[in-house]
Length: 448
Image 1 (cartoon, rainbow, N blue to C red):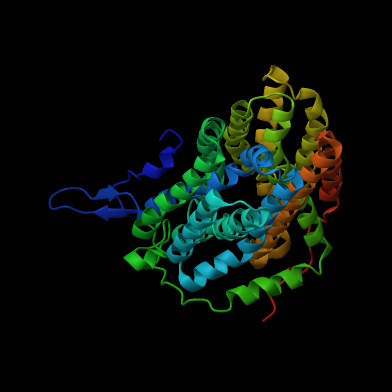
Image 2 (cartoon, rainbow, N blue to C red):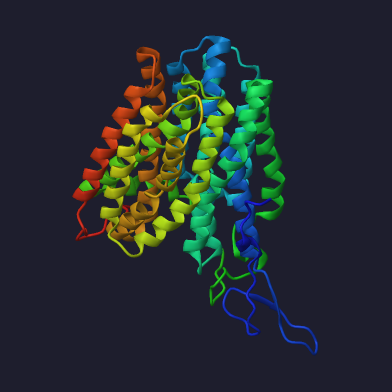
């Protein structure tokens, strides 16, 4: 598959044994290097996240077909999508706790099965509450268990070197999955209706389960290895029964600081202007202007391509420039681009629209590296958990706009008001980013 990066086959060529590299000496020969097991675990994680992208690609393709077949309003359909997005974010802070308690492999395998059941059940739905239950509740809970916490947990356990590289690639895997599935699912919806598309998503989830169960391991100690890059063997920790309580305690501690609310507010606007707005409503909005669904879905896939480039570049910028200023620039440029979008929508794809798509792709999750850097700067050892809650605000913002965008389309007959309002929100986020203080005197510590 072309989208699989070369890092999956990474081999260190030194003849001595550096940290994190396995060697197999043979009689009368120089030591032979082998690929560390951590890279195979990362590869399985990469494929799993790609498969998870199928669940996130479908909602925008279902709005028009469900509206036409059942007569459900776009607000009703958007409400189910908003439940999905909200649970995706709110489950994330607890996903790491579940993995610490029961193991990565069990949690991910169960999550994929829940997603398959939720998506498969919608094949036979006839009432709106069934969409809310299947796609909103079940798929939301399942996909939330495989959010960024999954990638972060795998990276933290299996790697002590190259964590930034692995984290960036696993984060970008979602965009690669969007690239793979969006054109396929849009073609299925256009030619065979929406039901085969939801069945395809369910089968994709089930197809990944055997790979997770057979190849994924919870910890390097399970197979007698050191983490990649570690100089000493790291024993597997005991199941952490209090991890969920710590996540809640960190939330209460961080919420007493103004910086947390500024970070959560800017990231909520980020989610509102990406997952909630473009990912959910771009395809039906383009279709309102006469653009074929397959063409609009292909444009979203192009966003996925440039999303990868933008994420890596933003990480490079974050190492060299002030994160607050980067966030302000990202949000300001995103807001300006949204103000021009109503003038760019047309029955066919033209160069200005392609420019918008490329730009929006570069900016899509460019906000993640500077937001993570600010969490690390402000909250120290608790930064990962704080970022989990900030990510939850991202998905809550996405959920609100997924719902309100559909309501606005029902009320006003177009999405123009939605684009303008979102552009104004991005301007607010740019100002909020600049207000964040440079350093907090005392880092927030978990209680209990």
